[in-house]
Amino acid sequence: MRLIENWFSERYSENLQLSFRVKDQLLSVRTDFQRIDVFDTYDYGKLLTIDGTVQMSEYDEFVYHEMITMVPYYYVDHKPRSALVIGGGDGGTATRLSQIGIQEITNVEIDTQVVEVSKQFFPHLTSVFDRKGVNLLIQDGIKYLAETKQKFDLIIIDSTDPEGPAEGLFSKSFYENAKKALNPGGVFVTQSGSPYYQPKAIKMAYSGLSGIFSHVKPYTAFIPTYPSGFWSFTLATDSVRPLESNICKPGKYFNRDVLNGSFYLPQFVKELIGI
Amino acid sequence: MRLIENWFSERYSENLQLSFRVKDQLLSVRTDFQRIDVFDTYDYGKLLTIDGTVQMSEYDEFVYHEMITMVPYYYVDHKPRSALVIGGGDGGTATRLSQIGIQEITNVEIDTQVVEVSKQFFPHLTSVFDRKGVNLLIQDGIKYLAETKQKFDLIIIDSTDPEGPAEGLFSKSFYENAKKALNPGGVFVTQSGSPYYQPKAIKMAYSGLSGIFSHVKPYTAFIPTYPSGFWSFTLATDSVRPLESNICKPGKYFNRDVLNGSFYLPQFVKELIGI
Image (tube, rainbow over all chains, first blue to last red; front, top):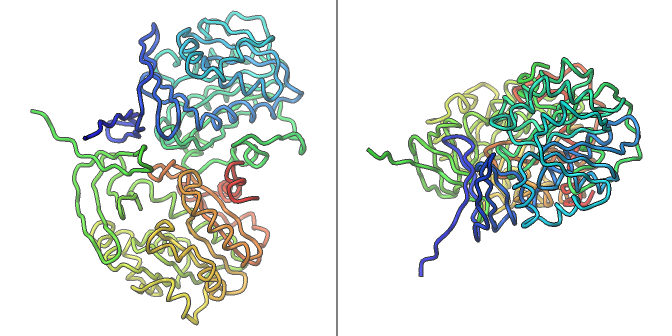
């Protein structure tokens, strides 16, 4: 008997793709904003994709979620208590924030279906939304940030890439509104794509934030299920304190070495953003 | 008319593969040691594979070759003049050594066909073998190192993974012979695989070298065409000098930041090798 093999492939370009053999496709839904699929893969467990791009896998989500929360956490110039997450409807970022001790979390996700799908397939990540102090809002994060009077110690942009609905999350006006919504000494961070395949994202983030914050620091991490395996984040703040030596609890990826080392950029990335 | 698409896929496991769309397969040859293929890819230019695994692409070889030469260069406690390369029949490592100023290079490659194929498709890398001071030997590197009376400032193991012919390049007896062939203050470095998909390589390198050298320091780099995009090297020396601040000329990937930052390991890698 010849078995049928099922594969999900993400095309990084017309000419390159990473393919995951899947046991089953668990769901496919077209929402008002995007197409969401969930696959049960052999090597990475459950895999969530949006418009054909990998958002999260069960087995390597720890890298992305630790790096988008724990690095900025240690750059706030006081013990951070409150955070705003824009995007992140899968709950992974809010979960990690809660684990590192941030109790007041506002999570603004534009697409209610991302939350619903994640509740079904990643309940260990979405359960954070039921916790006291965690406030999930289904609305446009750009509009929310333009109108809110609340202030936060941390603002985290856990978005898709700067094409389509997420493009406005990489604009100067958005960054200005983010700055107004930060407490003094607070820290802003955005995912900023693969420097190798999506140079636009880190360039937009770095140049857009540089006019607005006094310290803009891109950092990187290795994420095997993302294009090229090499991912960037861009952190911005007006107040860099010296890091204390004894505060870092390691995660599965993050540790004190990573906190320092992730800011050291390869030459082609420095040239890309002009530093 | 329906066009035929040709793809080369490297399987990272039974359930995961990276695929390159190719204009043409330029060569396929089975040698006494392995199978060698060369593809002309759309996104990465010419691609050299051995036994179905990517060895080198035209467009991203700079990362691997800079990192396997420039990092150890700056750890030699004097200006290095001589280097031994084992493997590296494509000429990429010897080329980079020559560019950073090392004149005396002995390159020991087991498979003459790797050199012949590379001469045909990567002549800009193999031309180093014609240079004065560069000595190419076609022989078993393990045997060479067991018998040589020569000594070197740098020994670089630019091999395939520790399965099949390269397994002996990850053994303790090999590392002991390497130490005997180093000048005082010299540095040994080996590629040690993807910590994510090939944990065996970095574990063997780290534990094997630790009993023999007083300083063993793994470091990593992002290489988009290698499994997971995350690659490790392991450096070993008996004499770590403080690095001078003014000696680093950047490459396309390497720079002073990378020299420092690449030694900062994610937590799962530290746990893998037990540090």
